[in-house]
Amino acid sequence: MAGHRLDANVYHFDYRTDLTDALCSCVGIDLSRQVMTKSQMSKVMSVVKKPRS
Image (cartoon, rainbow, N blue to C red; front, side, top):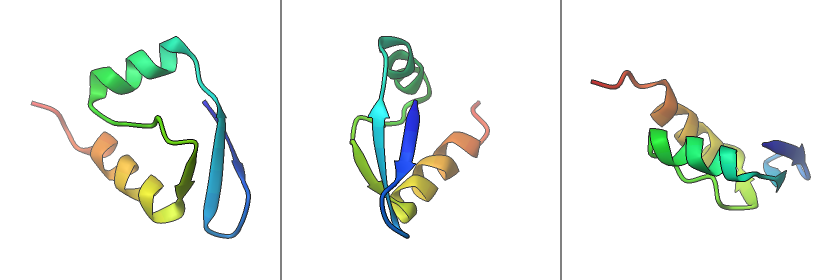
């Protein structure tokens, strides 16, 4: 995935593939939004960093 900063708090993700979508699905996160704020990205990262049992 590739993201570009549009503003101090807004990022635009403009490159996704079937592989990145499959990886996100495997770990249970949704990165299908093209525009995300910094706080939304922080929430996603907190889910990814949690240990899985």
